[in-house]
Every structure is written in structure tokens, then in C-alpha cells.
Length: 491
Image (cartoon, rainbow, N blue to C red; front, side, top):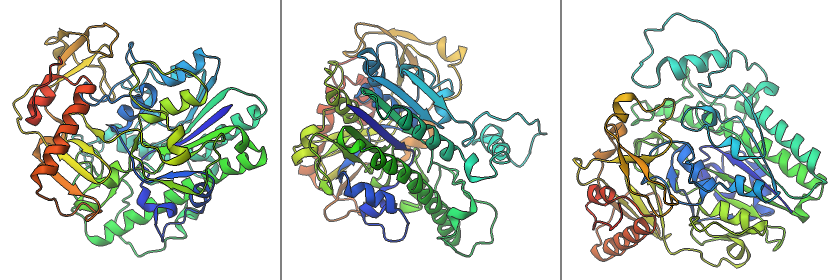
């Protein structure tokens, strides 16, 4: 048996034809939907990029215990488990966060891996330039904007685009190993993550008038730009989506060419969606995790059941993907993996959970049952949060000496395999995440989440589900305290 996971970053399901979009050209996603099961109630878990990828390895929520960071020594890693059971796991990606301080433990869990350079602010080409005083260092500064400007000068044609090169390497792996057995390929591209950089041919289906400055990289902030600029950004994103669709089609072509549908599971997924002006927000991470971000596109072809061109309404999450892959290869799940195999859900829509938890460290904690979404905001800003880790790194740097001088040794959690962890007081809550209210939405009557409702009975039921899931995740007591929820008996 074989398995391929094609993963995109920041893929918005509302821009895909199988989910009802009628203006973005994604014919290969439509083709995929006809060859697979489409999940309508797939949700994120831990956000954003690397927390989501930790879930892809461990099959459990992690956003309540630490912020962005690497795999921990006590974590169970799905690609590592496959490798240890003689299933060759291979990663091909242009996602540069894997090679930063806060992600550097992930790729070595695979049997083999390949990395394509040049996306976003990847520290790729060395060009010494004088400081640009117009760049705001407090946001992304020289590190991201300046380096991306350099990187783009080396990407002058379609074949040099990181996504194109990533898929070329992924297709090479499939071609080389299509006659072999027992392998898993994670073919992961950073696109359509911002910046929405494409070659001119992908923009041709989306002509529009725009005479402003180059703007294909929205800030993680409220929308302050005029409507014409918002429209322009949506067209830039649409062009990149159509490019993603084209390269997805190459994988489907390869599946057809070698009859891989007979013995190969195909998963197509993303880590989260993207806000393109909805709710007056750009991007992700700072704002509440509305469904444009949280309700993600998700497709699976299982060659055992051969279910295709069907939709599933059961609530599923990112944490279910590693469990699904281990079951497919007939490997027992480790006890700390909370996700569930989706084999029966694929077959006949059998539910695997009644509710799901999701959020970002320090922000809203959210729970959904598929109809209602409850977004619980911080009620007590004075509660100290901690990073619980044995790998003290942030996104692009190690924890500072000053941060480590105040650490304590925390008691083990139920998933740390009797290991104590460093208990490190966090820096101030990032990006003003505590500035929001608590929301309750009924998706049946308000799919766009525009009108929060007041319903005490439903809110109490959702709170009960949230507390239960947090306790199952052995969430630290301070997380309950900051949310104003009954305090767990955990750490």
C-alpha cells in the first residue's frame, strides 16, 4: 500500500469549485472531488503553521501547552512511526519554516526529504543591501520583506517558481517508486500562502483595474485599504489558487498514468484558510478564527472502499490525519494520539467525534459541533501563561537568556511520557489577542458568522464540551483561569 498527501498552506475552501465557488478557476480540484470523498465539516486544531504540523505528526492538540515550536522529545511522530515500521516516508516541500529554529525537528522524522528554496522570506540568496528606512522593523522588517524582494529576482520563470520545483520533485518520487510498495509521500507547498507571487500567465484569467503600489502581501491586521485594493488582493490570491490547481492536476495525471488509484490513498489538505477582507480582516493569526480560517477543504481517496464523488458531513479535524494514515498501513496508534482513523467515515459518514477544539496559543479557544461555533475569549488578562517545552525555541530564534532565567520545572503532563518540562513564562500575549469578545454562532442560520447569538442553554452546552476537550487534552490550569472556565485538576 502507498499514500500521498498533497498539502497546501492557507488554502481557502470558499475559493474552490467543489465548495461552491463559481469564479476562481480550479478544475482539478473539481476533478479531485469526483475521485474522492469531500469533507464539508473539516476543522483545524492548533494554529498557525508549525502548531498545525505538530498535529500532523502527533495527532493531538498542542496549542494550549505551548506556542509555535518544534516537535518535542516525547512527541509521537507519524512519519517516524511509519519509518520504524518499514514504510518509507518522504517529504518534499518549499515550506521554509521547517528549517527555522521553531521547526527544525520535523523533517528529520521522515526517511528522506527534499527542500526547495525561495518562498517568502526564506534566507536564501545573499545580497548585501543598505538598510531601507521605509520598512517597519516592528512588523516583518528586513527579515521578511527585504529578503523576499531579493528572492523574487532569482525567480524569473515558471520553472523556477518554488511550487513548480516542489511538485517536480514530488512527481519524480512518484515516478521512481510507483512500482514499489510501502511508502508515504508528503508533497507540501507553501502556496497559496502570502505573498501571492505568481507569473503573469496565472493572472490572465483575472483582469481588473488597479493602479496602486505592488500589494500581494496583506498585513496580519484589520482592513484599512479601499475596496479596489481588497478586490486586487483577491484576484492575486485567485491567480495563485489557479496555479495550485494546475500542479494538483499533475499529481492526478500521475495517479491515472500508473493506476495508483488501485492501491494508493490520496489526501489533499491544508493547515488553515485565509481571510481576504471578510470580517474586515486580512490573513490569519491575530483575529478570531472565523470559518474562513477554521473550516478547511479536505479530500480523501481510500482505495479500499473506493468511495468517490460523495460528500461527508461528519466533523473531522487535522488530528485525524496521522491516525488515518497509520490505520491504512495497519500500524497501531500510540496511546497519546487523540485523532481517530477516518476509514469508516470515508465509507459511510460514521462520526468520530461530537465536537472539536481549535485555536491559537493565547487567543480564543473555540469549539464546534458542526452547527454551532463557540469562540471563548480571554476573561482575565492577568493570568500568567507558560510555554511547556523541552525545546525552547520561538519561530525564528531561541528563547532568550532573560526568558530562561525565570523558568521552573513543570510536572509531567499525561502525554509527556513521565518527562517533566520547562515551564517558561511567556512574553506578552501577541498581537492583542485578548482584545476580543466571546462569540456564539449558529452556522445553520448564519453561515457567514456575521450575527452572534445569545442562547444561554446552547452556550452552556458548548462550554461543557470545551471544558471536556480541554481536560482530555490535559490543558494547564491557567488556560482555564484566563478563560473564566472551571479549573481543571491538571497542572
